[in-house]
Image (cartoon, rainbow over all chains, first blue to last red):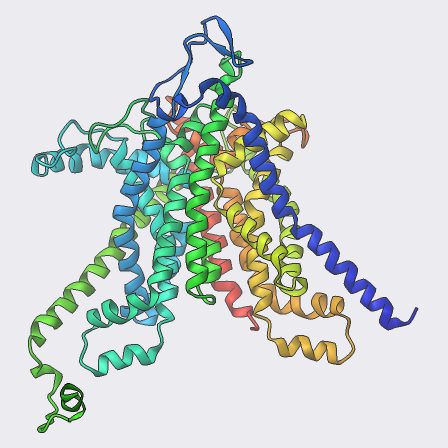
Amino acid sequence: MSPKQKSSRIDKIYGTATALLSSSAFLFLFLILGVLLIFSYPSFAVNGFKFFVSSVWNVPTNNAIVVVNGFKTLQGAEYGMTVFFFGTLLTSLLALLMGVPLGLGIAIFLSQLAPRRLASPISFLVELLAGIPSVIYGLWGFIVLGPVLLKEVEPAMAKYLGFIPGLHGPAYSSGLLASGVILAIMIVPIIASISRDVMAQTPTELKEGGTALGLTNWEVTRKIVIPYAKTGIVGSIILGLGRALGETMAVAMVSNGATFLPKTLYYPINSIAAFLAVNFDGAFEDPTKMFVYSLGELALVLLAITMLVNVAARLLVRKGFFGGGAEHVIQV
Amino acid sequence: MEKNVSRATPDPTPTWRHPSVVANHKARTFRSLVFAGLCVACVLAVMIPLGDMLYMFAYRGIQVISIARLTGNPISATPGIGNAITGTAILTALSGAMAIPLGILGGVYMAEFSKGGRFSEALRFCADVLAGVPSIVLGYVCFLAFVVYFNFGYSAMAASIALAIVMFPYVFRTTEIAIRRVPESIKEGAIALGSTKTTMINRLVLRFAMPGILTGVLLALGISLSETAPLLYTANFANYNPTSLFHSQLGYLTGVIYLFYTSNLSFDVQLSYLATFVLIMIVVALNVVARLGLKRFSKV
């Protein structure tokens, strides 16, 4: 065999081997979807449509075991997801409401206003924020943010903004508002770092052209930079939403684990992810395992929501541009 | 027609006016300043919680830190987080040993061998979807698949597989991007000198892309050691060191924080603060190395 043939054979082996290894992406996704579908099927069969509309999650472990549609379940048990589903949506929307203006403000500051000497340490700190474990956010929310909300913020809001529905009522240290604030701080680095990168890619000619025509800084940002970076900004917001929807520990620690829908902004809340984490032990007290299967269905619902959101964000960001910002989309 | 003509005709008396005399200039400058102030306020609004977090946990951590607390376990005479540090080290090393080679070699395929067809598009899509899967969902899946079905028990192995799945997409995609940044001229030069593609990739491309790849690896390791949710399902928790990689529960830093923070025992809560302090130190160090250190070695 000539050296040339031999080398091309080695290249072929290398290519095939790495192709096989990269296929593990398929394998992992297949594993996740397969396990979730198999283990949520009994819950589909027993709970049916009620799972999606009921707000009661009640597992009377001492009741008799009955068989429904071929699967064992407890008599009188009810598995309904609405409390957790709406909790997930509400906390995430609240996080967006606060996190988007904050993140965009930081992105504009870093890419348009700050001198380089100031921008790079602040960028570093913002990215550090992305690296802090969520359980530490939860702990901070529990011992610092919660008491501040309980004693200062919520009474003041109820007093001065109480005429707005949902803002009047007793204060809670852990609940919807606390979860929203913590999640907002957690998604700010995602929104800020991606938007900053996209904004920084605005061609200098365009910005200088604007300035030369007499536009102020704000007008250059609003009329030139933001329209230019629009796709990336929207993508970053949706990615932030994806993170907020799937966030587990922080919400578990500052949500108060509600089993009912919130009446005010301060009420205890729960989310799918937090419920999954907290009720892991409890699931085994159900002798019929229906609790485990229903958690599987909850996990499937959560996966479906986050997948939808992430795919939308990635398609948008990739369609808009490909370059400096793309790797940040996957790094955060 | 007439309109076109008038548009083409230049202003008979073109006068240049300094921006300061343009209408409502003052109001517009003022608006611009207000907006700059708002942006600074946004930065402060986020820096204050971060600063408070770093300061408070450093303060509380330093108050309780000692050699005994860093080496003991929660049930020894001086309760400590030694077993949690060991556990986190084992989990990070084991999950890294699985995810890093897999991710880097996969990334090499994407950047160097794939022809940009449907297969690689689908792979990239799957990796993106994987990166967005909430880690608690992964914990649930790995519990059923590895702890129960494959009968690993609560163990370092089951937990590391869960963490490896969390890390894989990050390493995979950053490697691809880092390799794509290596200039084409370097690759062509190697081929022109008679190098095989394999040698070219191993000796040149990977070396040039290494700072970028390492940044991704460090960030992925950071993600791995800050995870809590999937570990509750797969490693559970233990107050002592694991005896085996299978069927042996183990402690980890994030678990100490989550399980002890509401304890009635003051030393348990102190352990929670100490674990937080240690974890923040590690995360800060990783970030400093990844974002500041490696940039200096970047050749491309």
